[in-house]
Length: 354
Image 1 (cartoon, rainbow, N blue to C red):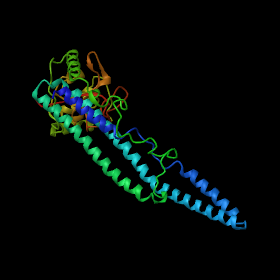
Image 2: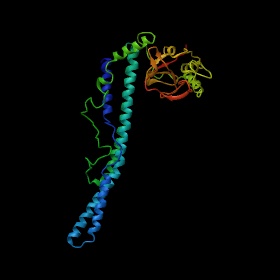
Image 3: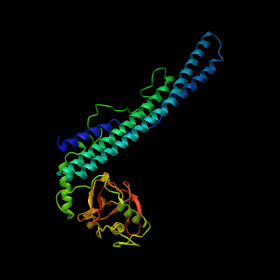
Image 4: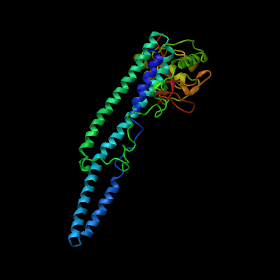
């Protein structure tokens, strides 16, 4: 199987896994419960009137009315007993679907980052490892959802005795099951960008894009291997992060390299300098240093170049990762060194000691 075929196959599997959760349901109980309660109250009032009547007919109607009140009371009780289970099912679907969306997004980003190195044995192996890890994540999510859904199904079943063996399905359902859970026959149109070759249509598209970017920014042409997964976050990286965090609140000054004022590249240069690693004086130099890092493998100490800061010359801003989800940086004039969320799209490099 070619790498393109492998990526397409994994995309199909992950897309199908996402579709198992269906569209995001609306959490809540039964929309019919309020109407049923009102109906029961009306019947109870009717019974009060009938109780003042005499004769066999009144007695018959009063008994029938009491039976209807009891039946409605049973259904209302079952509604209230099963509602938490359906609400839990909605929450499970929402969280599971969101988790699967993250798996698909990380798969796309990882493949895009690794694609330029897939002409080497190491790059091919890294791509396979990345795809396998994403499949493992999806499998773990499905197992958690399955376990919780079994528990919720038992909860709903145990609380549904008041229905007399018939669950009230249909138009009265305004809760999380109202939209249904599509479990098959979906085709590829339900979730754009997922499934089949739609996930990553062609590895060569990424290799061409990456080569073009490297040539435009002046770095060497050809393919560049990525840092080995899990290789970051060592003692030197920890020293750099500790140094950067010690400067929180320090003013931004364009061109400043510390130690009391910084611009963005000055902060990363100074912080890594405290660990004995020399970085260049600006973003255009630093983007060419160290080794490339897949977005899904970012660890503390990696330098982060937000994609929205790039122009024809290269990146205009750089940050220092303090975790896979946060950075510390010197943002702009009038601001100070501070912690911020990891940008949505970025290029990452891992500085290395000479």
